[in-house]
Image (cartoon, rainbow, N blue to C red; front, top):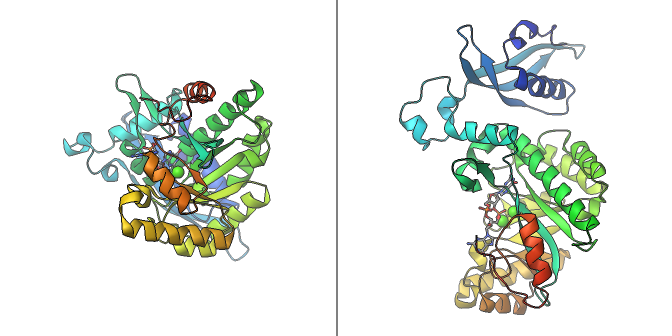
Length: 362
Ligand code: C2E
Ligand code: CA
Ligand code: CA
């Protein structure tokens, strides 16, 4: 097929490490698994320089549905990455990946993706329900780097897909080893953020099923958080993928509820099992009448739909108390614990049996 598309000679110039990824993306796209092809890869130019290229597009088919042409645009991506990237401001030469792209690729290649974990607790008794995996990158010079520095860049390219896969894999591996060491109860789950771009990758359900199987974990121990940082471009396709995931026994949480692009529409259109109410409605809820009213409404909405509600970003005892009074069942926030590496978090949780609201300082 690659030959039929006239891709073979061109593929030769693709850097070996990216060729497999690129071919897999084209194959998925041709099989109809992904509606749109979008991938970043590196190309070796005749002068030996490496250039970052983004390929986006669609494959055209003839009347017998054979792929005939890859109607893609291939262009240099370094220009539109991270507007505020200083390397770019300084006039990085064309063809050089932005520093952020390099940071992400380095981390992916060298084991530098290190998810932190934050407990989700039941407010009533602060019992641990699950742990949210929050991606961090480790850089040998700069140490731990938070998502605000690299997530937007990852979202704009297909790097979010590799990054998301890695976080999922590490989160499941961590959960499996904690469970088998008897350090977490069997009903504790991990909650992994997925971006809408991952949802549009057609084989997400099978990749997740394989990841669960590798760790011999049941699907019930996985929750996926649909983050709304990017508007879902193809709602029908996202819905199909989410339905498949849910049929496989995986729970879907709608993240940042109330703060995103179209929370209510997503709630109406997509199969949602859990709501996570955004921190901006939780912060100082005890002192703000409008926030109380909003939270009360969201709590009764969740109750009417029979969907559990998790409040994010709970920092004080009075916030926790107000939330309970408003009918919120679960919570997450610095009051209970800050995100930390799994081993640290578990040590704290086990120690916290007698000191339930210890906060980890990072
Ligand atoms: P989020 O999913 O809403 O995650 C909650 C964020 O709030 C986390 O920031 C967490 O560290 C922070 N947080 C938790 N409790 C408190 C609190 O009590 N007070 C305050 N001020 N903040 C609190 P973080 O780890 O920097 O992550 C930021 C965002 O990056 C996440 O927001 C999520 O949208 C995204 N993200 C993180 N990991 C991943 C990932 O693996 N994949 C994808 N696609 N997105 C991710
Ligand atoms: Ca989240
Ligand atoms: Ca959130």
